[in-house]
Image (tube, rainbow, N blue to C red; front, side, top):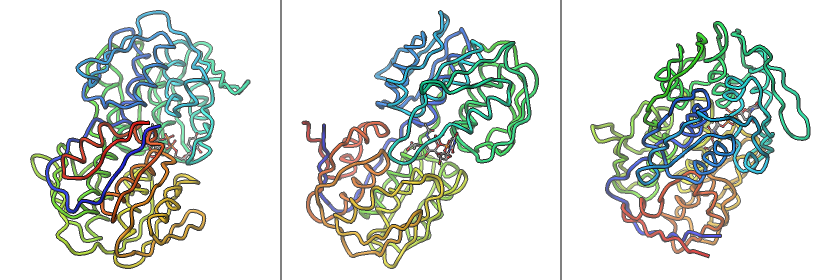
Length: 421
Ligand code: EPZ
């Protein structure tokens, strides 16, 4: 298992490329199952999770080829589609559950393994199953697999979700796009990745209105055609790299970054004393020397502060002036980066869903362990400004969501290298 070595190396300056969104691409790729015609995604990120989704779609009978050094996913599912999504692949990546809606819509049945829990939480599927049952699916759990059938096809319906689940919204919208009649999803998730998926479905001939709001209306159609669609910019990678100059000092422009993708996150950065400006090239982040100020953070569904940036924000607040309280309301176990940051000298107390961070002057480099995707990058960020060397082990977590992170951060002047093992 590879590790990454980081050494504090002073302020960071320059431009950094932001890739296409992993969490948009993982929802867009299963959409190929909705049509027999080719679906091509450009600006796709080059990540291990995308490779896992590719393997899953191939196991279902779709063809997926990564072109132009992996940034284009050319897909088609014109052949015989197999309805079974195997545990071996699904257990590696929860987003595999996003084939459930498309398989039901295309074939009228699906057998999808429950993904099982992951480091950050139990990750149940009840919001997905109740949403699809509202469209007429019958879903039964047998031997760890969801067996879903829709005799006579899916029928449009109005459904209110008790929580705005991102994945359940995506499964519902994809399934409803081929259902008979009109569907309305109330309390839908509003993330930019939902808007991106709906934009792509509309290009394929779907009739969807209200994406990005909490009420999405879908008029089912008989069939969808092929399309070419650019994957939206990754707002979580954007926020992650905006924190690099915030933590180290300096001035960095995140190319292609848009304020609308990270509004609540930027509000907190500015509260901490970081300056952020939007320009034709992207978002420019600057910290002119003095220490950042402590801020309180509560994670919420979009447009609130993203849970996927909570660990990275904690890395910034470890050396802020004052005490910050971070409340994690989305996942039940998403503070596993805290004990690792404490190894670097951070002062953090975790009680249930709250983490209290007492800012210290400087962190000290130490060997630390990645536990999940966003925790791993928060340790890299902390190491960028720490005194001495930090070695982050188990960086396969990192490779799931950040492409070429060493090259990107080295380009800003960071001292970061991968230790192959
Ligand atoms: C998506 O996961 C993202 N993944 C996650 O990003 C992100 O953290 C999450 O949305 C919240 O924004 C992808 O898009 C591939 P949810 P998803 O359904 O769809 C509970 C990353 O780091 N829940 O909105 O699985 C669930 O347990 C990843 O890139 C149910 O109770 O998230 C969680 O507590 C991590 N029942 C909350 O809702 C369900 O049926 C939010 O889950 C589904 C979810």
